Image (tube, rainbow, N blue to C red; front, side):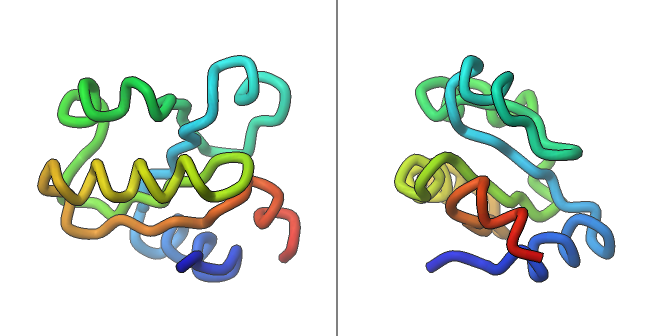
Length: 95
């Protein structure tokens, strides 16, 4: 299940959520969202502990929502208690 762009923006502004783009570096460079960091899906498990804070919410997204759903599962399995899937990066423009 995806969260809306309104919910995402609220998490970012009110709860200092971490905004993570799990697309490839090439995809990230072609269409960045404000405040997003790029941690590609294929490396997220290896680097999440060094790059993300478990005490803050994490919002993940990608091109369609499939990779971000996998990233959500990985982060939850690594002990991140609050992870949300925005789905497609294009959802950002819906609000």
